[in-house]
Image (cartoon, rainbow, N blue to C red):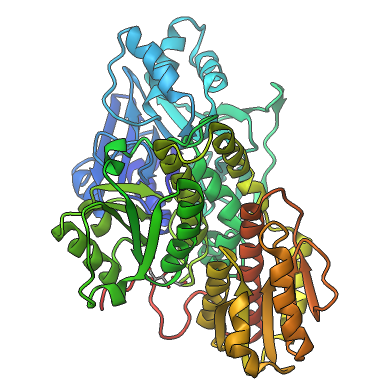
Length: 604
Ligand code: F6R
């Protein structure tokens, strides 16, 4: 996702900002920019695409005097990845960079436009700089105007702002998005949205807390806390290990990404949940006119989320839905009728098989939609419409947060379609929206849960196979749990519908057959329980995952009690991801780069 850097000092500001942005590249971005305020005024540069494009644009620009500089890598959320939408954003005499989403931007923008302010971009960020300059007119100084502005913003943000009205100063604010400031013995100040750009430049850093804002000059760091009191910076030593900084202290990227899911899902939901309806600004309702069927197509983990979506679309949108594995669909001369909406799902947007099916659907004249994590990817460019999952870059080869965000998008989309088709009454849609708001909480990893799974994992390092079983939407979750285990532990695992075991696989049951049983309270609990009892009676080793105690299990992982099966789904997903991770760690495997696998499969 987006990255921020800032620098105040006498060194080569341009180089420092560009180097800092390079350190944030791993987070993913689609455009970048810098703005530098020196004695003779501002210079600003922006470029779409990789940082080399920005380097090329700035190659003749030299900074050799004291300067205040800010820089940004942008991962598009509001508005396409264009130069105009790239940060920093300019007002009359100030520039701003921002991570996060300003939820009340539309209201602020409307008011500013009414007052004659002209907006250049489609971003939510641009309102910050105009609102600041509006407040400047009625304030005694720039800091007062900045403080007023911060209080008017709703949503999540990390902000840096520089203004000609207060040269030699960088203003900052943090609410929900990370931000830190670093110092060294040369009186320089460095800002960033994560540790890595500061390594090698700073010895000590102060992490800002939510609700804090303030400013820095060469001589001081002024921090106002969320209740309005000034607080002294609290410095801690900066680790000098870049790889570990990128992993935010986690052992593996996969682990970091599992823990991140609560936050990234909040990004996925942000701005899309009204009180009574789901809002997808990026969709035109026209896309669904004349549509009587949905066909989903994907590979691997994305196929599992597509399979999950079939349950949601049929249950809530009451529309006939089918799902296909892309590599199969390509070569089986499928019948495609024009009243079918063709949806492809892909983390990368580049998977060759999925991309090909999208081309086939387009050629057959079907309307197409892509659910994707990477803006400007081949699929996003090709499809008629796209919904971005906003998971941020996923580094672990085994997909985790991309899956979680895909499921959240499908849940929202099924309600969006339900409203268009009048298939669910308004109260039920409102109730589902309330449940969606609870998803980030259901995805929080607790120490006790992780510890329990870590301990338990030592019993599952051998055996002649694993069966992950579940019913309804918990069947695709079982498939996904089995895939995660296979990918990083190299143990054989299969996902199976619980009710199907008795039709063959139960013949394998013995103590060395490990069954990971998903037993949600709110989806066919009694039926799933009977299926597990059948396996237990045949001496299969059972690890049950459920909110309800289950005494026929050899191991039991208790999840929280929720009012709906979808929240159980998300917490069970976390349990399965952690279980695979811990088994893989115990087996000494390379968790982030499992053998024989690639992150983006661009060949058939
Ligand atoms: C599994 C995994 C793969 C991908 C599959 C499709 O952890 O990552 O199974 O899901 O290769 O990739 P995308 O979603 O990029 O099309």
